[in-house]
Image (cartoon, rainbow, N blue to C red; front, side, top):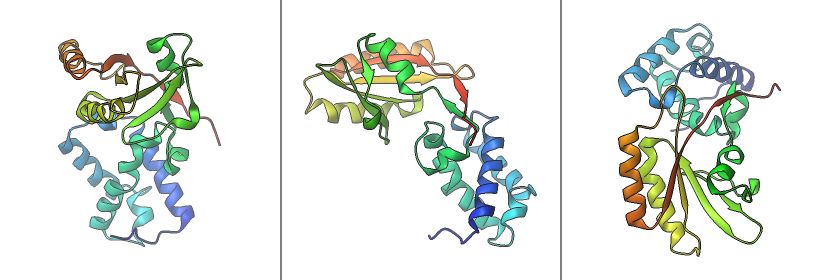
Length: 201
């Protein structure tokens, strides 16, 4: 379904306001019912739905919000994709959590950062390792990505499962994930990522 034709200035203002409100939530951890309630609230919000009313119906707004800005939000807070410019905060980058896990000699190669799932290559100058990261609910996707990488790599891929201050990683879940990773010949570690204010401009 093609995206409705919304003037770029209006689109930018709407997304920026939407993300301003989403940034106050831990959106990725909200249950579906709670997200549905927010869709309704935003359609009725003058600064969001009111701005879009000349270009789409209320139902069209819900679809656009869900399949557009909100689908892209998880990538945007990773500083990834065209929507990253609209968020007011980002999660700490891999350059802050990968070296403490792999060792001080290791550094992220920024040009290798990719998505689906979020991943990169890290190097100590002579070796290179694949590192992927995501939330608890993404663990299955992380394992699959790491297993695919392991087929062609001489170094064990590293999976990083992260939590936040609001939603930490459960200790029992961590134990289970370690057992699964070991069984698959993969490494796994757990970090707590912080929110950082996005640079102005």
